[in-house]
View 1 (cartoon, rainbow, N blue to C red):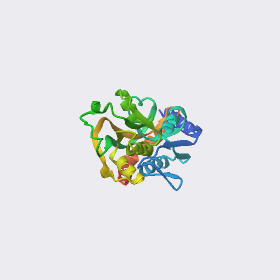
View 2 (view 1 turned 45 degrees about the horizontal axis):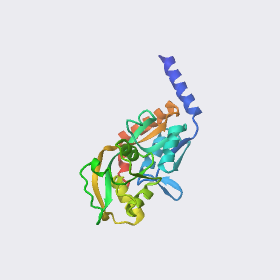
View 3 (view 1 turned 120 degrees about the vertical axis):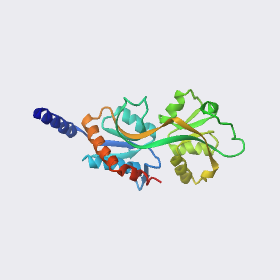
View 4 (view 1 turned 45 degrees about the vertical axis):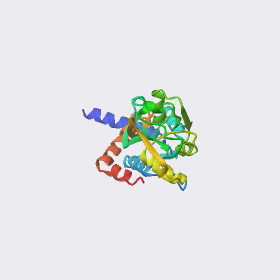
Length: 242
């Protein structure tokens, strides 16, 4: 028994010793954003605190368009991506290291004359143009539902501006996203109308490692995160988001 424990510890130390810099990637959200050239925000604080608590100090955090971050996490080793929705299609593509928050998506449109198309359910908006971001969970969800009139952007703010300019009829956002984007673009949120909640697309947002990352690294991060969550620190940090 003792030899097995020692062997396990040796394997763990060896795996961690061989690990290279952890490449932490994300996109611009109300919880992840650039300030004075550094990626900050409540979710970033949770991720960095987890890594530090795990004794993993060799990491770098970068903010990219979602499609680039997602592609890196699919293809490269030692990549930690956040905030990523955990879906059935993605389940075996990543190592899931911790649920940071839960989210609920809603379809928004602009209030005003000429935009009052009737919305009763998801099927009723199938002929409207909807702004999405490539490889985002909302993009994947709507495509799986047979939506073809999707206008793709690289950044959430660009997607939102297309709604404001009339290039799209609807955009799927969380309440926090809508509030943040209104502030960023100088728009009064009273001009937005929430018309439908996408219950099927609503899920948890996680931090997750690429599959070519050593399992020992994943386990160490997950243990540290789980302890932070049990202490209530994750909730306290995320409640300071906006």
